[in-house]
Structure formats: C-alpha cells, structure tokens
Length: 122
Length: 108
Image (cartoon, each protein chain N blue to C red):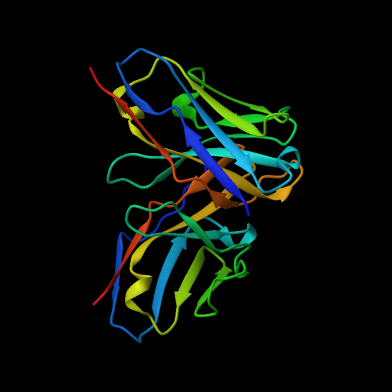
C-alpha cells in the first residue's frame, strides 16, 4: 500500500534553514509528481510546491519562491523541501502528497503523509 | 492566481443532505477535487474530477460542477461525516494548485 512518511520538522529560529524529507513506498515513485502542502495551526490547507516525476518542472506558491526548493531522488524514492530564510508565518504542519496521474500533468493529490510540524520561533 | 471560495461552515441534522459549495469564475470549465479532513488527521481525497470517487469512499458522497459553482453533496449524513472539507483545482495559467478556504461540516 502507498506510504508517505515525512521527517525533519522541528523548532527553528527565524532566518534559519530546515530540510524536510518524505520517504515514499508502495507505488512507482519515479512516474508521479509529488507535492508539499502546509497547514498553519487552526487554518486551512495551503499548497506549497510540486515537482514533476523526473524533477524537470517545479512550481511554488508565491510566498515561498526564492526561499524554498523542492527536489527528489528517484533512486531513494524520497522528495525533499529545503526551506531557507524561514519566517514565523511558515509555522505549519507540512504534508507531502502524491499526484493522482502518472506523468507531467498536475491533477489531484490522492495520497498524503501524516505531516511534520515546523515551528519558526525565536 | 485563480481564487475559489467556500462557505466557512455548514450544519445539518443526521440523515439529512449536506451541500458544500466551491465557487470560482467558470469553475465548470476545470476539474474540481474534494478532500475530507477529520480533526488531527491528514486530508483524504473523497471526490476527484468533479464527480468520481476513489475506492472505499461511500456513494453517499457525490460531486457536481457547472458554471461558477462546484458542489460536494453528502446524503444521509452521519456523525462520522463531521470534518473540514476542501475543494481544489489546478490553475494552469499560474501553474498553481489552489485550495478553497475549507468548510467545517457540523452534524447537529
């Protein structure tokens, strides 16, 4: 069965960096796009970034462009989110999620991990 | 980028029908997907491509999409349906995934 396990969250000071990982199993990782979605405490879902199946295309929400980088290692079936210059407003649970369709088209997110909490605070 | 709007809350008695809307300009021209999120849990896809259900999702949950409004309909509402529901689209003009603000379904 599909499993997505996030790790790397924690407490970090504003301006510092953190790297999240999402280990995937149970499906052909290398043919699916992968997403990061976050949810601030008590708030709704906010999409953060997507990476295509081969890593050639990456898209970001405007609020993280230039600060966050999504990447993947198909040999390790893992997707990453490098977060630099963190701000207090980046505090959230970060979920990784698998795209529904194989290939390059972004559709919907059919499997989600349980999330990892990132707290940005001095 | 594209904006989709949901009502913050919907309340319904057990056994009745709940309708949760997702509004956006000409949203009927794109595919809409719906997620259920119970407290403390990750979101779960419940309807995709306007009206299809993933395996394991009961037929009581259904979707429609036309004009400027997409709708998630939950028939014969049960206590276990109490959750937050989010609609989602892919905005191909901005290359962004867009979520609605979410609707809290309360079962009275």
